[in-house]
Image 1 (cartoon, rainbow, N blue to C red):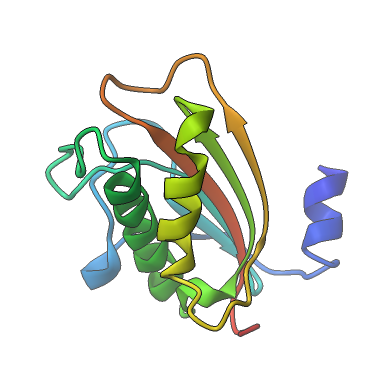
Image 2 (cartoon, helix red, strand yellow):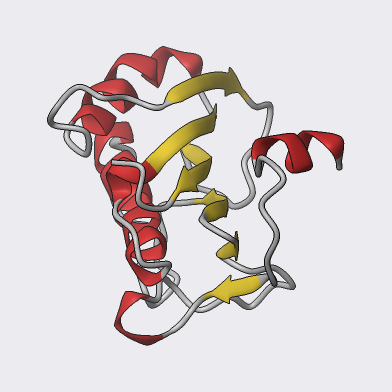
Length: 145
């Protein structure tokens, strides 16, 4: 909890769940929220390459799955009143670390000015569903870009 308090910079505010309207990502059949906003800090749950019908987009192409993941992250940022370039921290888990270059190249498309978030990337032994190649979790500071 100290990490969250430090990251939020002591910002006070009520928790706002980011989930609806035209900015919604896929429906959630599991007990979590896509995003939680406190003040101007947005915590984004791990996003996978699901479309609105819970189908995996991109098949066995890590770049295509990455683009879908970032489209989902972008929807959550917009739903919180921001934009994808407000993302300041990213954690990505890969099914195969050898996909890192393709994932990074696709991520660059969402940050055309080169103002990239801090990031970490790891290989996971097993992803959350068959066919998934990656999952990305993010933190955004709405209005910072």
